[in-house]
Image (cartoon, rainbow, N blue to C red; front, side):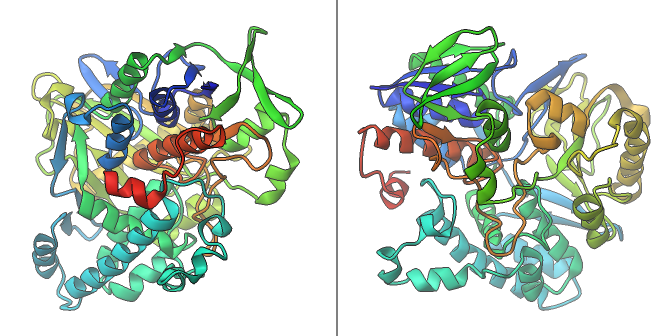
Length: 511
């Protein structure tokens, strides 16, 4: 049994803590904020309840795996509601398209939506490719520590039947946007499909085609709403961790990770206290962990130039009435996605005509708002923080841009219905969550060959250091962050002689 420290009580840290405790390790978790769950925080204001961070839950099988480690059934702790249609798309020309889970329903919707007879067939062919990419991810990428192509494929498995075909199917050198448009001729539908990759906060024309696997992952396994909101995911994990004996300390900032002869020896807290540990799982931002908690690790910085993913502006709007045209999840798309991504990812400026993600949870859960109201959540992607940007001055004007976009494209006249309001800007996100330059999604997935790879969960630079969170493998988004915590815990457990032989294929059969 090892004594393990978890830095950061976000979803990845909680997943790692539960997994390690279930396997018999002594776990202590340090959280700098007064709440647990990281970005999966909850804002309660004037009778409204807002999920502050992630609002879309996919792949509940990851959560089930974490609970099964402790011999528990997730359904006994968390109620999940499947949403279908998964989301509604509002386009700049006034057209509207719902995304359906089931192929027959989507085929019918596309046939009614587009005059082009090849669109439905092109979408189906794209999903066939996406299904293969999803399978490749399950076989080679998920549930194992990966930092690059060599961690997925080696001399041993390259000779296995089908491996070379999987490598070729990854379409290395091709982008998400290019791949999508090779199948889908209607630019509106292509724009909708591009946004499967917005879970990773990167531009579709700069992201590797292998990320197209997200489409099948979502449409086949569904979008789910945890009863009470996505904040309930964090609360459920906290309860499990507590039951398993995890020692949790909030309002506790780690100053540095201490080392001895190339290995982790413990952590030093902000108050000067030293806590001796056998290993550390850092659920903090991977780049800031190395720079600030380890004093800089040259090998980490040389390995790859990591770019922050995009940030965002989030509006939390308590409305006195619901908008009947909305589903639970909605996208209000920009007029020109190329212009939008050029502003955000190349110019480093807020897009003048942005895509808005709109969550209207009262459509599913009326308890989030009083008196038949709505706890509206609006997220607009923005560039990560650049020098000279002052969001205190920029925010009022950009708020007007967002509300005008919602009015013009989705017919949402909501200004007069707002009874309470709060917001987060990129600067707020940077300060609140200690992420790199305000990035919501960790590190960008840019690069058509290796953009999908994030820092390895098992540090190659320091024995006893493991990484979790959206800036570590396999990346951002609720299921991936949860998976990162499980991977880090599993790697640590195996390294100190714990349960061996938990291969990805074996684990996939268990869920």
